[in-house]
Amino acid sequence: MPPIAADAAPIILGVVGDSAAGKSTLSGGIAAILGHDRVAMLQADDYHRYCRAERRRIGVTALDPDGNHIDILEQHLCLLRQGQPILKPVYDHVHGVLAAPERLEPKPFVIVEGLLAYHTRGLRDCFDVKVFVEPDEDLRTRWKLARDCAERGYTADLVRQSLDRREADSIAHIQPQRTFADIVVRFAPAAEHPDEAGAGLNVRHLLRPTLPHPDLGPVLDAGGKNGFHLALARDSDGKPVDVLDISGRIDGRRAKAVEDLLWSLIPEASHLRAPLGRFTDIQGKASISHPLALSQLLITYHLVKAALAAFRDQGTR
Ligand SMILES: Nc1ncnc2c1ncn2[C@@H]1O[C@H](COP(=O)(O)OP(=O)(O)O)[C@@H](O)[C@H]1O
Ligand SMILES: O=C(COP(=O)(O)O)[C@H](O)[C@H](O)COP(=O)(O)O
Image (tube, rainbow, N blue to C red):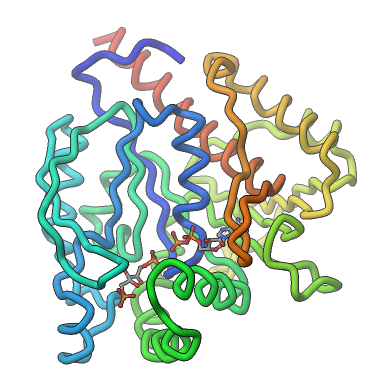
């Protein structure tokens, strides 16, 4: 990794998707690779306009742009991009209330996770890399039930009611943001293992030509048909995209070989190697997923390349 000048603009990654779509899980490993001292995390949920009780009372969901301070989020992202600190609001997920604001200092990398972070042009223009996560919908429901009951004080019935209440807003406001992503990440169980919710899940990456993606030729040669597959396809909007499939059944040695090859594409960052693919399964146990690890590494590749390009640009100024 090149030294990063104190006045360099941070490289900003967006990870957007519906509630319990896997944003924090994906981002956590990326932050671990880059180093927590080099990454500022911004949760767009902190910009909820109302507390949980008010939302219920006025009939607005957390997914509605009108229920969020989108304008302040946009202003704060612009400030971070200019290397300025912000005083950001805080939403307490456990109690569903707005808490005291906190200062956030920019770092060389900023990861923004949220429901609506690509909602406006101004927001979208702030990102170097835009990821959208859209797991299989039944899988997301299982993830949300387990997470919200274990960590947010919900009962299963309350989670289901909340999902029903939010469905229309998810379709109206969350899903349309998919079109703005450079990479769409979809975890899903294989047809023959419909109950899989953890390490055995497959992942599909839709790679749009809005970013120069790594040459996966050597990876594919080494991976062969064993768990790694790249094809040209058409997206739902008819546009051509590359589709990368990583199988949840990829064996540990093969996954390690693919990881090694991916690291060799960003030699400047090889000293940042960290254990990847960690997640909490729906029983609450710490686990490792190879498809998650490789997804985190592929996204990190773009952040490292963006940092190198910024460093080169500075040198020529
Ligand atoms: N890639 C993954 N593989 C396995 N389980 C996952 C994965 N991503 C998320 N999960 C499960 O879903 C839950 C919710 O994910 P989380 O990252 O908190 O979602 P979000 O940040 O989008 O709300 C996690 O606690 C975990 O149990
Ligand atoms: O949907 C999300 C995002 O959460 P995440 O993306 O982390 O799942 C809301 O921030 C909370 O659910 C707030 O609503 P409530 O507090 O009523 O659950």
